[in-house]
Length: 217
Image (cartoon, rainbow, N blue to C red; front, side, top):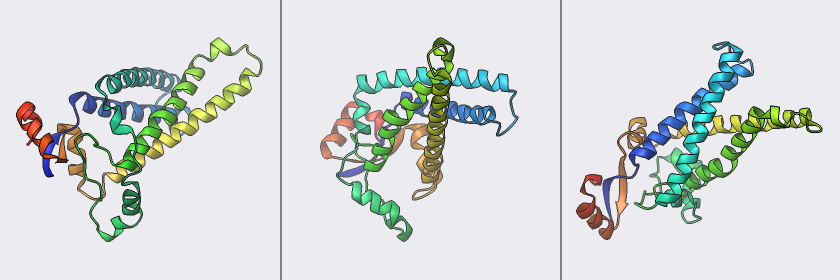
């Protein structure tokens, strides 16, 4: 097993990541404005920006889901029990003792088991919760005449806000994780140039060197 620098994040993944980050930050800032936490925007402008960013993010997510399934890269987001305990132990104990991270990236498994579980929950629980409640809120005019619509709208708003706070917590934890272990720059660079250190089998190394020489250093 050799450790080489390999392009594991494609141009689309990097575009997806940074576009998603920008749109989520826009949604959080305008969302806080709508709840009265600041007065950076007027209420009307905050609603317009929030809606436009939400539609753009929804379109990005739809395209990314299509890309995940057509390229079969969805497999990177399936958590595995193998190695989970070692990663949990590292983040709860070993990291404070200066131990080396137990997980080594593989060509077909770029996320450690805990990362894969967190990303999967984000994609199948939090994102759908925020999509569905956001669309229900946006199209309230279409169902406002239903019985108890006002009470349902309050419930929709509470779930939407709760999901938004959980996404904010995910973002903060995600940024915090960039400050531990390797340097911040080392953590961020793979999402800029696509390259990261990966353990390769001899077969993978030979395949990349011969068929995709631009993807291995």
